[in-house]
Length: 338
Ligand code: EPU
Image (cartoon, rainbow, N blue to C red; front, side):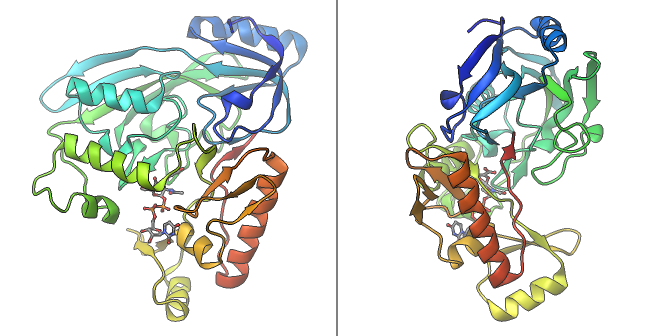
């Protein structure tokens, strides 16, 4: 598809849940220079503009009105290579995992814990992707893009992005109003491998001094074991965020459930493993109406074939209800409903 919008585009292949969805209008952005023309196209017709990266963290409706821009711009550049840090620029449309592999192969280390996360570079700061003890925000220098209201370019420094656990200003005040065109990353030197996450530490137990290559291999091995490959079993990664509760609530939960999986937070609160709560409510491996709960990771909802957004959101609602009834904890959705 070119940068000229096409009408009635089937998005089943553009979302990793493979949910059926028809976009009223859709264009692929290969070059950020085409964006002003595409925004003018939408303005002339009164169309709302939405932006899609790899489609790996979205819940698409069956019919999507407006103009959808699929980010496909590419390019990775090393801007600074000093003793204390490397600075890289990557285009929003670069697929995330190949970007991590490319950086690793060039010796630009630091992103290895974030290997195999689906999606694109441009989507990564939106939900502040994270895995195995590392969240993206520690590497973000700037997010560059276009304000969809004014059509003007805008640069946000890391502090302005308001990053927190799976959240940022792009899901808050700027939700639906900002198009990411490129991200600047800073990789501090020397690289200190981050191996404290329990599952990663266990995977590296036989490796006395793991370096970036060992961390990369270990993260990829764990993910391949635990998380379904969306190309084989459509999914959007974790469907719920890990909830954070007060120390007081946690104390009560611990008395009732001594085995509850949790992580103490710096502010005294406690993050709970949503997967454990969901599994404890008996949902792991559950199937209905073409959708289900993955049998190796209870936080991942999957489309076994023929699933719809309605079947998926209905299943998610009943999972949330049962977790709330049993534990008094409210689970928040992780994928973004469009
Ligand atoms: N667990 C269960 N049942 C399960 C799976 C896990 O009880 O079916 C328990 C285990 O005790 C395990 C703990 O939950 O030790 C944590 O599981 P895991 O390490 O798989 O991590 P998670 O908390 O379920 C989060 C992220 C993942 C990320 C992993 C690894 C969220 C919402 N999810 O999952 O991110 O890959 O940590 O760091 O924070 C995503 O965001 O889409 C995603 C996959």
